[in-house]
Amino acid sequence: MKTALATLAAVVLLGATAGDSVRAQAKKGDKAALKGIPDLVGALKASPGCLGVETASASSGKQVIFAWFEDKKAVLKWYYGDVHKQVMKDLTPGISNPNPLKEIADDSGPIMVIASVTFAKEGKFKQVALPISQIAIELYRPLPGGAYLGGRFAPVNVKVPHLRDYTDKEKDKQ
Image (cartoon, rainbow, N blue to C red):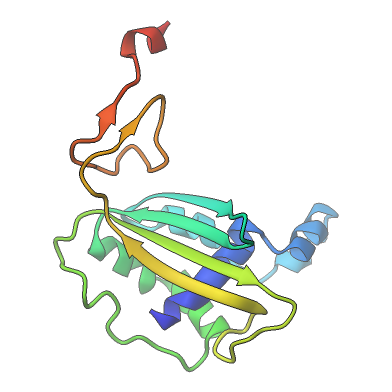
């Protein structure tokens, strides 16, 4: 999964934090600051089999991306897609993972990928071309159960066995 770390950093940089200086320059009309940097959150959302994407900032300072995919095949479509490959090449040259998700069964069902990064004044890792102190990619799948009222964190098309909906359907229609 090391090559996915590059994508995480870039996605978080652009999607969750968008890089404060890049965002500030873009707001001032300096679109050159964004030149050459792909819209990775948009690319994730457009990737076949991606069910939804959320970004967040944690109280610990981590920038986080939650991306839900239909299954292993959909995650691999993103992984081997042009945008992801380019970001891996740009941010982690020389690092590769020749068999990603080899531990995941082909019939795994939905997969949530949580990517987190903590930016730092100076980089700690020679493998990543960004100043970070932490970076991680973690994979999860839904467990049976849970409940919601009025909406869910996961996209509605993520199927969760025995998920309870406490929303009053008749009142919501009024």
